[in-house]
Image (cartoon, rainbow over all chains, first blue to last red; front, side):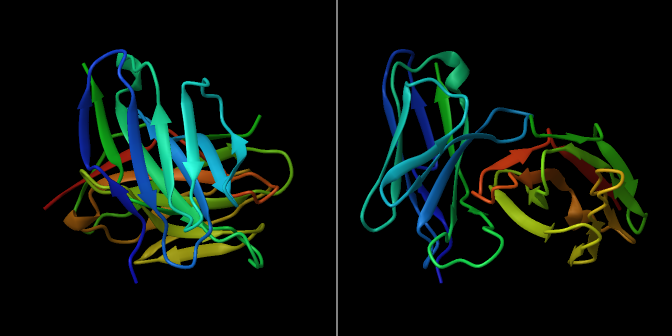
Length: 116
Length: 113
């Protein structure tokens, strides 16, 4: 049973560019959340997708956008990159439909984005 | 708003020492509480969780008890190993159980042989 997978592993971009990160959820999961983890900090919630719609959003600008596909995989897009976007981007999946009780999230290995 | 505060690190211990990493939280309602562990160069792994007051989560020798009266969820292990060296994150999920997690800043544990 594959866990949460993310691609690419590492990425280097320059200021002003755009980037797309990808995530495949754990088998049986239907919800994907994205987090940004700056160096030495805890992860910060960006947004969550369920049924191909953004379900809730953290305190991030509109430069951060996402998408969820019918197979539950997801993309995170960041436009107009700046140095402060350099971070580890983590994807987490969970099962919402039919779930009883705690909606536990399981994390992927992350994508390390460096903006020069 | 909801928040999590962890003790600052790094915490340096000798192998077989007793570990405590403090975590306190502020939340409206009754959140679920988690400990995640991050090994170097990797993502986060769920270590343990607790969903209501007085619940004790446990896994791999680690334990934490949900204390509503002190709004705490301290992580403990009786005898640490070198392989436990990692960054530990305390987190809460919003009481609406939407799955959104709020993390503390992390505590680095270094265990020396």
